[in-house]
Length: 188
Figure 1 (spheres, one colour):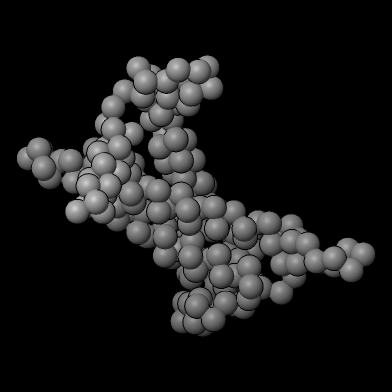
Figure 2 (figure 1 turned 90 degrees about the vertical axis):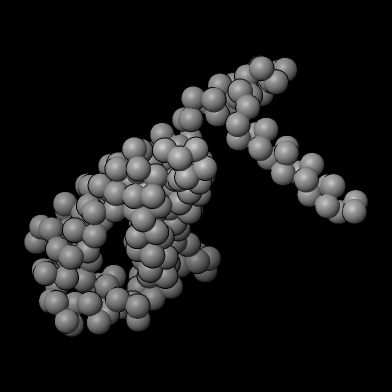
């Protein structure tokens, strides 16, 4: 009984965090700033707009010869993607990757009005960024040794952004999922 009551209390507290105007509950300057950011949905806007811009830009670049040639070592060394260029070749293969990124960006934009489209865009980027995150391990040259200590090279750091993008993808799925659930429950 106690556990059920504590779970209910935790769920109510979570609901308060996501539905209430936090500005009215904040007491210190620091928490008022945090509430102002939350009330204006700035985390979602920054994450989604940043993801959209990155996907459009990277997708378009992959559809150029330098973009295709630039990802050859990444795709070729990955056990998850090496088949891709063998089947399609580097230029068409890179175009497919670029179109996938652009499609995900469009779905995230559509998600602002139709949250289920945003969920699909987030699922596409989740698979994409999970795959590219593994390239940190499979691509030669992602770490370098300086005075006997291993560091990420510029290539490793370039790929590490995909780990962060993977987290953003999960956040977008969660955000659009909440919006879709609310929409389903209100009959919109």
